[in-house]
Length: 116
Image (cartoon, rainbow, N blue to C red; front, side):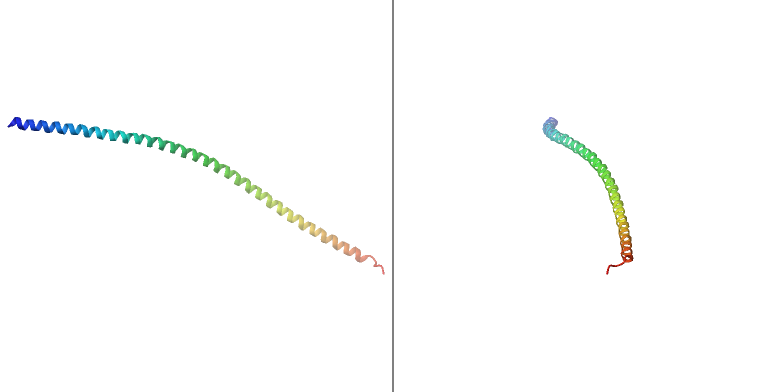
């Protein structure tokens, strides 16, 4: 009876071992596929990261240029405002001069004898 039990045990062990080897091969094949996909994803993530770094560098450069343009525009605006103020003062001075010249002309014309 012991030999029948041992024989059954041996058959069962061999069956399990055979099924385990097949299962192990399938698991290894699936893991191999997973690792291949992970390698592809790693390459894609690396490329994406590199692209993001390049974009960041370009954005930083664009921000520096924009800041420089903003400073130049501010200086230009200040210069234009000064020129407008000077123009307004000049116009006011010319208006006073004209008024003064008119007043003097009126005085001169008034002091002249009027032809009758």
